Image (cartoon, rainbow, N blue to C red; front, side):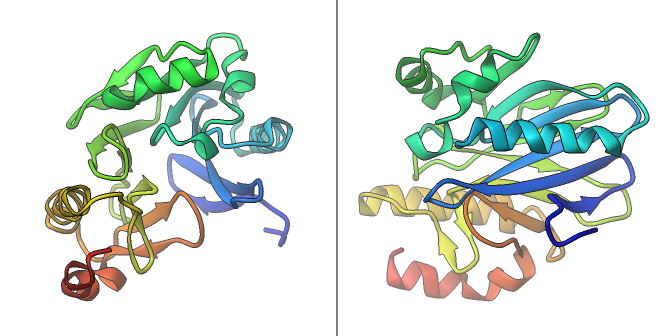
Length: 222
């Protein structure tokens, strides 16, 4: 893998690629199913052409004919959806987002969110199965996507709800308590330490690396 490659994990059934785009350094993730060629993008943040280049690059990850089938959005904030209209033009692509954020995304970007996601849902795309975890607080409809790997660590795409060093930004004490309660109950209490966290900005981390810091996060209030 060259230093310029977007490939970050070559898993048994899928590859996982990532690029960072825009002045906000947003992470855009792409899963490609090796046995079907189906591709699922998480957060069409910006720079549609760069995203399309990653999608094309990932065609070499499968012997099948590769094609984008879905774009999943972790939350409604502007910096995570700037390329959504362009990617939505891909023939047959399905857009999905958290139920409470979907209307705002549709209004801001003039797109149709075909599937509105709730906590506990699972989305399946011919070789790619992702569980939906709602993490309320950063936005009302923020969701994380869980990709489980048999006999290997689980991968969770957390958007702006969990980063190395803390939870995402909130705008009230109530929102902070809601977010850290959800993150603790729905992530830290449910998944083992080797679970890999892929945030909306910056580097990945693991639940084990962050778990000892939970009391400190609660104490400081952010």
